[in-house]
Image (cartoon, rainbow, N blue to C red):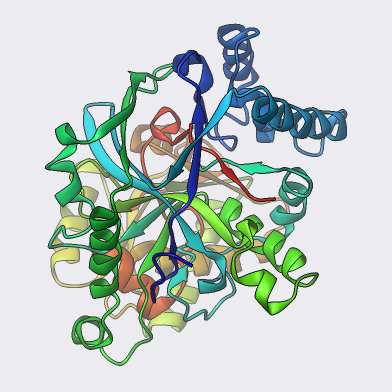
Length: 445
């Protein structure tokens, strides 16, 4: 196999729409977005019309486990075959795609390539080169497997992160983008911003990328940063369950192959966009929590006890105003404590955990919340973007809101290395319209 390496990078044969296809109708946002907003997908349907589109090659997750799902999946597989047989999709050869995405005032860069699923394990305690950054809910995999089972193609909405503070992998390519063959340059539909892509197919360029990633995997350098820990090179950014589905699908296929056949089977390698966590265009936004159908004072008492038992002590502080709560939170956090602000119909407060066992505030809070929710019949939780919404909902009777600080991007790898997968809904890489749109394809059969 050409470009053999020690870090699980595979150079795929890229399939892209022919030059007659309207790319503004071809590219569609990730299937796991707008799941509660059917009007978004209705507008996408109107925009696409009869034009070739990835809308015909994917199933918006709002339709999972709904009537007609099987017919939709059969139509997807048939359309994949049709697009390949009619030349709607063209093979652009072996290579990577350098991507520049401009949306919501940010510009970020990425590199589309394939990763070896043999280097990935989504189970708790994994020590593989590729690791999940949040707990994988295995019950979410089977419905997604039904879509992939007979599909001849895959498209990536998966974003995988590398920890490259010296900017050695992607950034040298962006500096010379003008000298590369441009594959696309267009506006994405429905507020998705602008996207550009360039082909990376030169042997020297490809080998340079792989060598730079291998340097990130150097055991001595890694353990100099993280101590005696197994090397991790890739962390899931977006699309954790899609990557886990690709892994589960590959395990099924591998069981039918000889070892020799398994080495180069196309389903072994999943197409992703690689991004540097240090890219200025990547923004980690906190995801807050609101409890419903609870007695807030009972929750406070229970949480104080559970946080104290798990962390060697917890103090509950109350404040007359939100501003006082914010000032106290900022002050105590500087001293190394995990400060967990909350709001109820009676006002504002926070839990002060001076010696936290977890790396992140969200880890300290979520484990205690999970325990409380198990004990309180009828209580539910929702995950909220935006502090204002938390204060609005959390201050209503029978509710309680919690705000969390943004996670610094540099903390991601350290937390996964030391704590394992993050608690669910720890951070978001932008709003729904900032997620990856389907564009490139790769054969998996």
